[in-house]
Image (cartoon, rainbow, N blue to C red; front, side, top):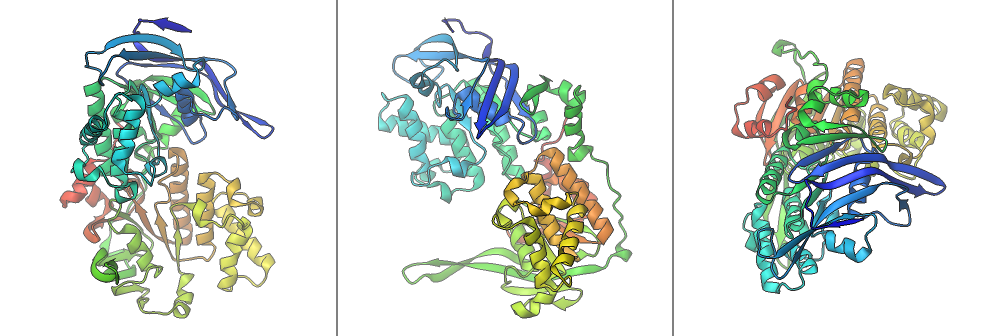
Length: 566
């Protein structure tokens, strides 16, 4: 189906699209009878939980799904294909422009290759897995340009690549051009991905969770950048996310997906302010700003420190030369002094590289401090041997950011939870330990028979609960929760946060909650510690730190939070 020389208002029209995936003998209806359009120059956001079909829909548009395991039983994806003849590059160039309405499902591979990267570009969620580690970032942008514009000289391609890097505000683009992906920060790598996607000036940019793993300040910069580039170049954006704060900031229209179906869509303000579908209402109710506020008691006289950290340093040596001499140190934790009060939830916030995780690990003596003191119940931990630390391990536990990598894939959950019990002589027999493990599984709202499954058989939220169950199995007094909600859907995040509160109240736990999500901090924590470049720059009651911060860096973090604006 084609219609030449007719530029319509709709850039993409998706009609009754079905995308089915074949898994062994099972057919998964990943996209099931979806209809909507993306207008020229608009940002359309797709929201929904993991597995709802958002990314499969995006990959269907650009036709990147493997043909062996996917097919489209019905539907169409009509794209207003802008073609330019003649030399040069750019929407405002003197080339002759024609339009052809094409069905992406009917195009041959060579036609799809002409469209991908040139007219439709995609930014993936994790830039480190999308960028080639053996080529410099500049070469990778040039490659995209030369692939679609073979008439360009290497010099012209390099100039255009540098311009693209400058457009996405890469500082000192000339020197960064020859850097490899591993030499850049997460935010810089994401900017390179955007530069690569925009180098050929596409009409449609598909952004699949491009800010999920970024710090709040970097996220704000990337979103602002995308808005500016969109206004300047007039392109459309299909933005996939589960963050309603981001949706309210950038979307003209929003669609909500559930189990492959588009259950609701419309203008952003209308959907966010007055959702019609029960599932949309459930998602919005799970946003931290909309959760029931917990009572936070401010009473300095009732506070008793459980953990006391004084003048703590964790330095990592920088070695150079043939003999690898130490020339400097990375001061990951630099002179930190904090008290963690018993029975409280303390949030530890800051950008990536601020030293949050290193501080948490140093408190637990998983990372040996360079200097300073860490006391729990007035007992000094720094300097103790592994054998001397063993009795204290029961009191202090950690729940990691990525439960997939922290759970042994070869062990049943029963073994994962009972093994630490056996090490610390909890329970008189294997049967008693299994009963205790079953009890702790129920405490984190999982079924007892889940003990006989392997980690890969669970969802991300369930694995996070299992990580908590393992930490709780030793009946600790203090748990470090390291970014445990960062990769979770908003509804699963809400469940985990509410679960933490219940467990904390039942067991009189003290929690150090490491995160970069300020909205979660405001909802969950009693007190907040803010770190920057290894130092604590502000600490106090959460309401005071977030509502009336005294430090400029803290203010910058809070102002950068994407709020749900109705």
